Image (cartoon, rainbow, N blue to C red; front, side, top):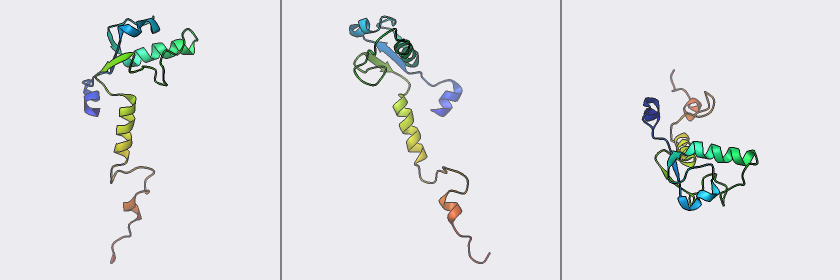
Length: 110
């Protein structure tokens, strides 16, 4: 994914407002694919500026029952991938000298 991002080939996550829930989101066009991050910013800004109530029944800005999604990766997916990568054996994390290899003793006779 990093190479795709560097080459500009990564697909951006998109959201599609289901027409059934259009009345909850008057600032968004229903039935159109829009960049999900942009949709979330519009909704969050409206809530923060007290121009609209929180439309989702849960903590997520874009509720699964209100929107369809395609392409890209969810924020949770990115976080989970990063977490897994950090836990790979042999991966260095933390300050230099804080690895198992640095704790090994030098070979005898040197």
